[in-house]
Length: 137
Image (cartoon, rainbow, N blue to C red):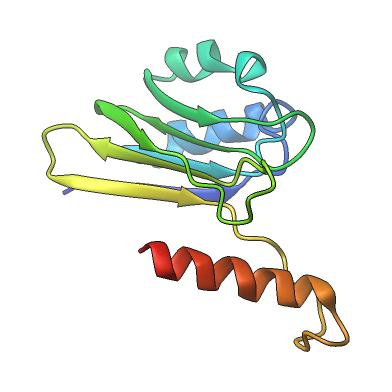
């Protein structure tokens, strides 16, 4: 069995100390992070390597969004989708090599507090994102 954790981290570099503590205490096989808020070349690969998470699939973006999947077991990046067609880094899909498993890490847009498309455009954007993602799935 593969253990997987998912965390909207809201800046991986800023929160790396608590990520390290979580990984040391809970030790999931795979960690999916959303809202990493960094470009791929600035992702803290070495910090994850030192924790035993030596396999990475990172879809980063400067200052906003971004997703990363880090793993203690081999993974292979297979997909990156842009369901909004706006260049936002909100998805990375991986194959867990030798496990017969695919894993999609998705950062879904926040919909705001008002669940009404006409009053709250962000809620409409979230619904549209989910509809396009569902069509793909």
